Image (tube, helix red, strand yellow):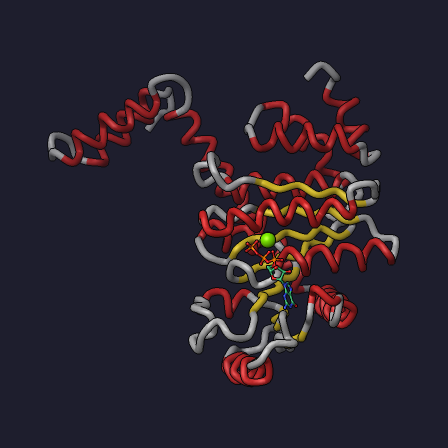
Length: 319
Ligand SMILES: Nc1nc2c(ncn2[C@@H]2O[C@H](COP(=O)(O)OP(=O)(O)OP(=O)(O)O)[C@@H](O)[C@H]2O)c(=O)[nH]1
Ligand SMILES: [Mg+2]
C-alpha cells in the first residue's frame, strides 16, 4: 500500500494486472483505500456491460463463461470474469476445475479473471462483487461476466447487478425445472439450455417455453431459450448474439437507464445501512455489545426500541 491512490488509479485504468489484483484484495478486505480508489475511478465507469450467469451447481456455468469470454476476446473486446465460488461443499472439486480451465487464458492481457470466495463476507458479498465489477469497468473491461450459483439471496442480489442475466438449465435434473425458484425464472433475461446434446433437451425446452409464456414480457422482451453445448463450443455465437440483441433492445427503450437508477437506489441504501452499522457496531467490542443487548431484549429486560436508541446514542448519533 505504498503507491499514492492516484498512481494506483492510473495503473488500474491502464489495465495493469497487479494493480487490479491488489485493488480487488482491498475491496474484499473492505479497507478504506479501496473506497478512495473507487472514488477516483468512478467517473470513468459505466462503460462495461455486465452479464450475470446463474443456475444450479454443475450446469456448466463456468464452461459457458469461459467460451463466451473467448468469443468476446476474438471480437477484440476486453473481458473481466468474476466467479463467485459456491460454498456448498460438494462443488469443491469444481472450484479447482474452474481454476485449471481458466488458465487457458492466463497469458492474455485482455482478460482478467478473479474468483471470490463466499466465506467471510458477512453478507457483504454482493457489495464486494459490485465494487469489483466497477473496478473492472474502470480497467477497460467492456464485457464483464459474473458467475454465481443461483441459490441464496446473496446470489440473487449479485445477479441483480447485471445488465443481462443468463439462467442456465440442463436436461435430466428432474421434472420440477431443477428446483428452480420462481425468483430465478423472473430474473432471467435469457435462458440457456446447456448440455443440449443430452436426452430430454426437447422436453425441457418445451417446459421452459410454456413456463416463460406465463411470465409477462418486459418492455416487449420475451426471454428466449438458447441451446448450447458449452464443452463443444456449440451455440455460443447465438448466445452472444442474443445478449447483444437484448442489450440494444433495452438501450433503445430506456429500460437500462431505469434499471441503473433502481440499482443505485438499492446500493445507496445499502451503503447508508452499512455505514451506520459500522459506526454503531464497528471497532472493538461491537459484536459483544450487540450480543449483550440481544440477551437483554430476549429476556424482556429491555424493549428493542430502547436498545437501538441506546446503541445509536452510544456511538454519537443523536436520536
Ligand atoms: N455433456 C456436457 N457436459 C458439459 C457441458 N457444459 C459443461 N459440461 C460439463 O459439466 C461439468 C460442470 O461444468 P462447470 O462449467 O464446472 O459447471 P458450473 O455450473 O460452473 O459448476 P459449479 O460452479 O460447481 O456450480 C463439467 O464436467 C463440464 O465439462 C455440455 O454442454 N455438455
Ligand atoms: Mg463454476
